Amino acid sequence: MELSRRDFLKASGAAGIGGVFLFGTLDPTAALAGVPRFLPLKNKVKETTTICCYCAVGCGAIVTTYEDETLKIEGDPDHPINEGSLCSKGLAMSQVHQVDGKPNPLRLTRPLYRAPGGTAWQEMDWGTAIETIAQRVKATRDATFDEANSRTEAVASLGGGELDNEECYLLSKMDRALGMVYLEHCARI
Ligand code: SF4
Image (cartoon, rainbow, N blue to C red; front, top):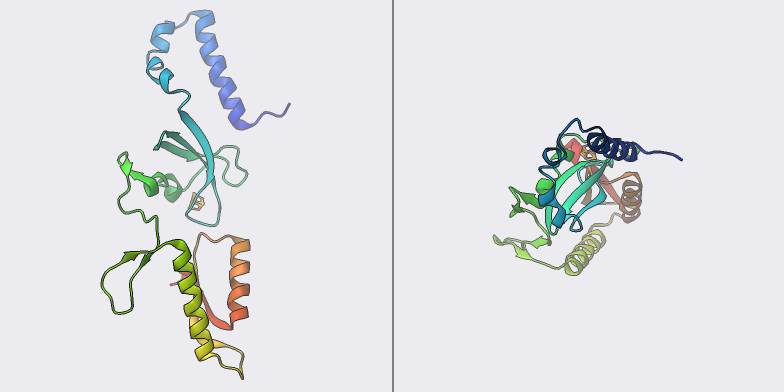
């Protein structure tokens, strides 16, 4: 049977606790002094695997939650890319969701729209936002398209560091099909 690093750590922990009871080297009550208060929560605390949201390295992480609260996020030792490690940004991932145990007030969960010349932002649903962007890209491209050179210089495309290989491929294909020549990446500006 193949034993993952995580299974090995769990088995080692169980063996350690078992050893304490068998050989009586520690008082079991004292050894488990901190455990009972967690027992009523045991079915509510869950671990979920995820991928770091920050960059295209795609490190794996385990999120431990209790109801809506994130208790901790740690590197996933079974993930083939990072094998349990996370960089400083990945370690701070939980702050996207919450700060000091409360929902992060700076987190955007819906698109914000500011009209041309306007000063106030207003919330917009995703469907309207995507449709508006598509209509404006099409209108700008059609109005500025250079037929002789098959291109438009009026629209640019900016990729983000969190886009993976396949997403970059699809984005650059779409950009080129539209005739865009200015493709950039956030890491270069
Ligand atoms: S930001 Fe750091 S932890 Fe997140 S995927 Fe990139 S290298 Fe991994």
